Length: 123
Image (cartoon, rainbow, N blue to C red; front, side):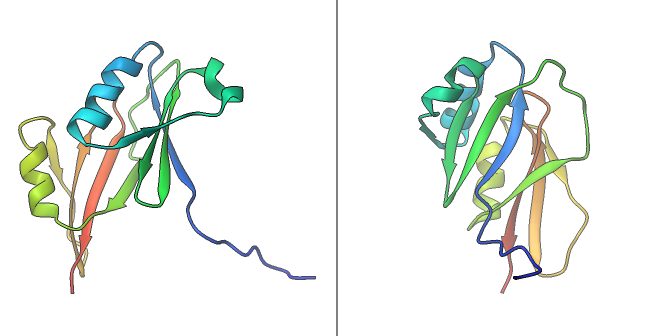
């Protein structure tokens, strides 16, 4: 018997949007960020929300009655932080993150109050 959990990879990140905001979420996540929407399983369709593909993981947007502000966030590694910053700087409020050696990064808040960090690992 093994005494540890054998993790394979991160499967998905789940963040929340308010009820009835799926169209606005599509505009932001597909339109602004350019993510590909993927079908939700039929068993979960009644819950509302949306699913997207990000590289080899999924981003699940669930429905939440209350959207409290928090430091919780999802961080996604990308290839080019400078290009992403230019794409987003007139669409969302960019937040500078404290420096971490070996990476460059910034954050932003989506239209629903979720904090998202984009980071690039430096050589």
